[in-house]
Image 1 (cartoon, rainbow, N blue to C red):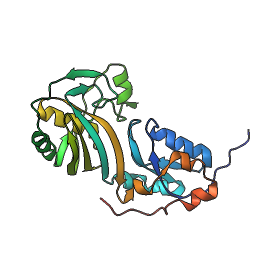
Image 2: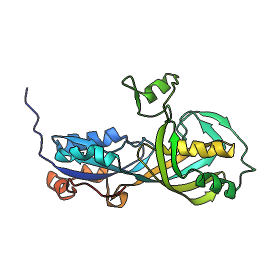
Image 3: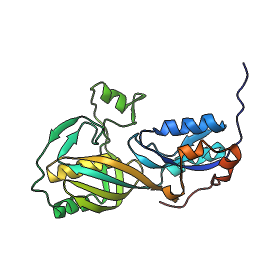
Image 4: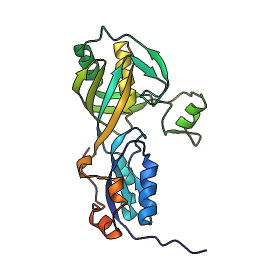
Length: 239
C-alpha cells in the first residue's frame, strides 16, 4: 500500500467559517487539500455559527492549549419570547411567551447583569463529553444528564441594536462560554425566554476575523500560496 505524502507545513491559518460548515469540515478540507503532517484548531464553532476559526498546522499544534485559553469576542442576535431545547434557533420550540411588557431598558439591565465572573451550566446540545460520548449525541436520544457548572467571565456585553423582541449584541468572554446559554439566561431573567438566532466569532486573543480567509479561497490556493498566508507559530499576547 502506497504511503501518503505529508507536507512539512508549520504555522497558524485564520479561516472564516461559513454557516453550515462544521469546524471538523474546515479542518478536514485543509487536511485533504494540503496534507500537513499535523493539523488542529482552537475552539469549535457550531454549524450555525460563522467567523474566526484558528487552525494550527505542524509545529504550531503545540500552541493549541495556550491559544484555546484565550478570550473570544462574538457578535450575535437573540430573540425574546421563545425557548428551544438547544437554546438557539436550530432547536425544537418548547415554550413561547408574550413579550409586550418587555422594554429596551429592561433588556439593557438584564444584559448588564451578565457581566463578571459567574457559573454557567453547559447546554445538553454541546460537544462536552460524558463517558467519552458528546452530550449532543445523548440529547438526540432524548437523554438529559446533570452537568457541572463551569466558571466563565464576561468582560463586556453590549447591545448593538434593539428591535424588540429581537436584538443584536457584542460580547467579550472567557474560554468555554456558551453564548446561546447567555441568551437563554437573559430570557430567563426577563421571564419571557430567549434564544440565540445568529452568532459570529470576531476574535480569539490577538487574532481577528478581518484577517481570515473563507474556506473557498483557502482550498483554491496552491501549497505555496498557503505558506505565504500562514502566520508564524508564535504565542499571541491577548487575554
